[in-house]
Image (cartoon, rainbow, N blue to C red; front, side, top):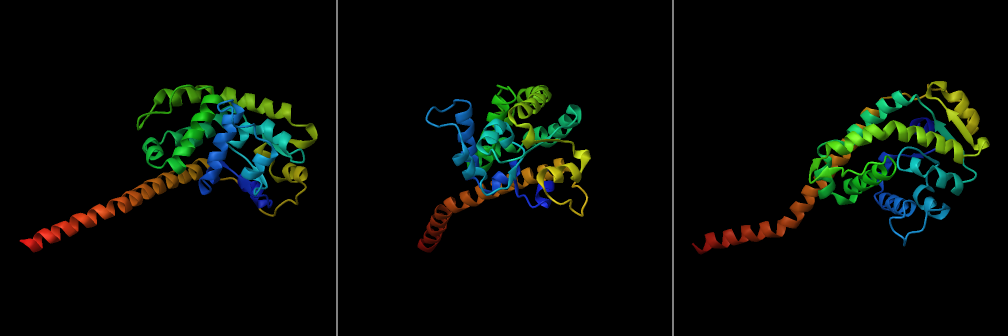
Length: 253
């Protein structure tokens, strides 16, 4: 859907775009803290706050925005809502392989600890989403090892959460602003609803699981690279001092 919207000229936020602007993740963490009363000093998000997160986008899809459907519908009364409704079993297969399996990457727990700015914040967001939206109260990892029970409960609760989400979106969105869309319907209903001409290209279809896994692996690789470079930079004065001491000792001899 992100690809389809962008073909129509609507730049669209998505989970993977957060890594390109880390302060966004801090704001989403605040949004969850307000939504679930985790911090009484943070007020629930309205248009002003969402504008800071999403004002430079034309639309948004995927987590974490999906879990703020009611707030976003209220904050943007002029916005249209496209609800992609899929067979729950087909959705689960895609979500499980794309999101849950991606999060279960064994390199993520350590990356979260050494790169708290990006991977760490993504991990915090994942924890909040899974705890408060999927009703899983197990920790995601134990130290630097993934916790199998966390992923098992996430999978067990996924279909129910998806079906509940579908009903929430239908309930909170006025009928004249809502399109219930099926991917197999292609461009026609989507373009009619959005007032856009039908593109002269096929409706986008690609391996989302592969694309997201590739992005996750890129973030992990970058996190380790940043950490190694940071360590090297911090260690350099000590290395120079040791080399100088060795040279002085050699000279003295």
